[in-house]
Length: 215
Image (cartoon, rainbow, N blue to C red; front, top):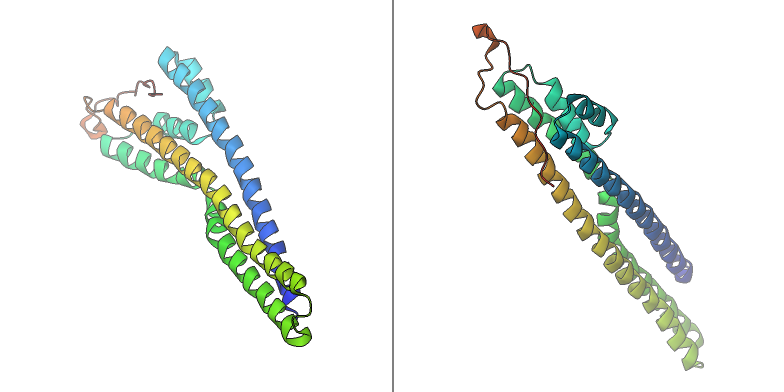
């Protein structure tokens, strides 16, 4: 069995894994920046109290915050319990877009050190096979073979550390976005707290007045 070839295949797999992780990191940076800019525009529209500006901002926002606000405005005629349940369901639906592709970075953090260790083991096995066949006629070549094998472990750990920094950063961004979504949903639910929403009693459902979202 050609262990040197397997060692090279493992190194190539690590390069592919790193390329995927970098692509996801770039995509998530762009996405979270766009979400933050959209949230600020939506917050300004809500603070202005201009219904036309609010509807325009909500219609233009293709982000979790915009979808939450669109749902809030669409559920304005529901009873309080129905409103809270629907907004909660809408909040849970936004998690897929907020956390999308982060599993690739998480997998890279876990898998790259293991691949590096595997590459090192395969490289050392190949070196020992060469020693068993040719003897220790060239100690420098043996040292170079072991050094090449250990490079896989170093590369795997380096990739994991690199991705871990961004993974923790993105997790913090996800938590921040989730808190903003919760605040937005709770504020709009609270706006209905003092109103009677039972349409069976013959009363016209109160229209929710959008409130500004905390920065």
